[in-house]
Image (cartoon, rainbow, N blue to C red; front, side):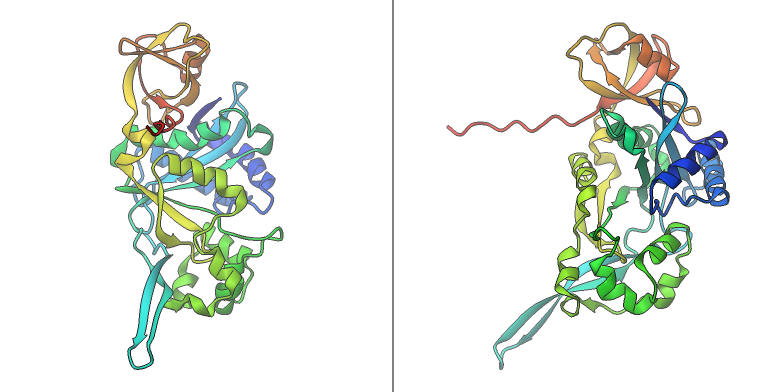
Length: 345
């Protein structure tokens, strides 16, 4: 498997992927015109013809037969063309000495604080291929691209995680809050923002702080929590250095997590090495490996071994990267080493 930039020729495969998502990714609608527009912008971004505000680095996961099995993306910057909205959790204190009352009331402030940061988005892997290293490769490949071209990205990278909803797609947060202002189903509002129609948020969403005590208990309990299906993705990003800083999605209250770009584990720990072709060994750990190219970027995950400043990989891995012995690569262990805990004396 390799991760590479999307191409116009991938459009039929992307349409098939979009249809296979069921309700679908809001940023990957099963609409040929919209997908063609997005792919065109992605191609411009990889060629260096798009400003950071418009850059959309869309990658595909491809098997050795050339079949597209998944996608992932990273946006150069959010909110520089139109506002980027989140709720920021805060606190208002009400107190009366005479009545001996002291209340700390959680609040939600409509905020644009995450403007200008880069965003991980549009991650989807076909269900039949969610095995082995595929999911981690598809997701983490973006970090090696960021490490190689840091000037293309913001000071922070954010990721909006899917919030709580039931088996019918009903969001308790939306039912208790958003529905009163938007008068539409959650799926419709989510779709409109996903395809870039965000003006209605500013037009309809209240600007003053919202007291969470007015929400249902179910809605309050959902704030900052992820959907069970999203727990593995959240855990993986946390292992790379992402954390929750009190920002949530305005529709389903899912957490927006963030990390300083330079401190993401796969960014800060990556190294440039000379490629050697040989036998890594049966106990060689999997590495994430990038051919250090932009428009012709190819990234894979494979067993590899460090040896005297070189990275030893097998011939198949070198072929996937379209490199030979002596070429330079950027590489990092696919996963962070588990923390070592000492036994108490």
